Image (cartoon, rainbow, N blue to C red; front, side, top):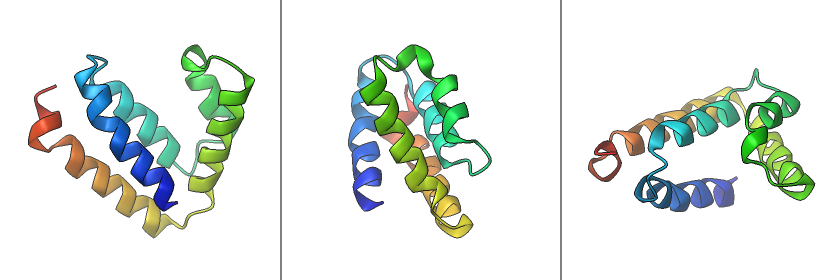
Length: 93
């Protein structure tokens, strides 16, 4: 779980600087944190960004990591991501 969070945090500034904007990334993370969204729904929602089966399987594994967490952990991750979105470096995008 810690590795997943580190990877998301390291990708956040790159995504903002690349001009993709944080809104799409926020949607991706909100849906991956959402315990009511299944792995299949998650893949369908972002199918246009998935280049192949290997990436789809990797995303399903990451989604399963979040599905295995309790609600308290998911709330904490959500609060952490909100703090990042509202930080100075990302807020300007």
